Image (cartoon, rainbow, N blue to C red):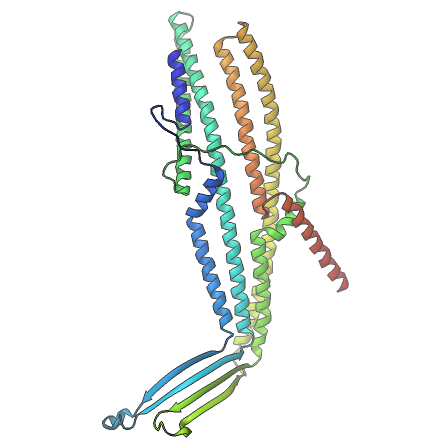
Length: 449
């Protein structure tokens, strides 16, 4: 009995990440907020998104600068190569200062600015989405570690109980009150339970290794528990969440911007039928006779070009831009449909987990009553120690099931918020109200039209 108590105590120490021979203070458990912060710092995907965002900013600045005039200076030296003997006598030296401004380019420069701005906005949305996805994946891994920790504790209890059953049947066999087949059956059950326990240990260790890899920490002793808080009541319909997703879902927002850009592209493509205007000025000073002021020349001009015949190139570009606009509208409809499906799936998953939580909580109450009754029967001698431990194990399982489902409910809640694109349930009503107001305004415009 003493050996069993010592073994269990050592298992508890190992489970808690404390070495029996260790001296001094132990390392604190890793908290969830710190884990998420470290993962975001270490994430290569976030770093890549930052680089893409910076490239989009540079492209936008470059597109805006294309509207500005360009000024440059140049120097020139020339001579007659056929008169190489008199090359230096017949040379022509000069300098010039040129100012050029693309005054009107059929709206193409303006469209490039719109395009660069949309690319920048999409890059920002992609970056935020990657951050949200990585935080959710970290939360899922963290919760799985917490569930694995509880499952491993239950598995240790089951393994110990199975070992006691095997020893009991072995003593009964030695006393002649049990058959050899019963002994073999209990041994097989014990070894099978031992195999299951080992697999759970390996899975638990792999989850820790994965978290260590993501956070960049060399060794994680343990993870701290999280506050288990969630709403037990929810809206009876997913419609408010769907309306909120139309204004907050990343993919819908991206397709909205791309559709607007495609619409502008179709409008700007028609401007290619108009002439292009380029304004330029230049100064030209010949150095052949530096004392002569007549060598200084300053010119200004305007170049106008008009596409009289381009073999249908402009018409094809206009048709392609209009086709891109139609495709963008279709993609926008697809994005809205997908957002609606994802929200409904996440909503019903959250609701189902809430129902499971209620069932598990009721089972826990029944298990507690059975456990208390078994404790009284053990004290009165009506129940054996093994039977009492079986009732205790059943109660521990029901408690662990409730804890696991609590984490499932919290994760389902975060998934629902993620697909909608908001940070809290309070934002749902705000976003849904904005969506309803926008719908009313659109209907009013349709009536006026």
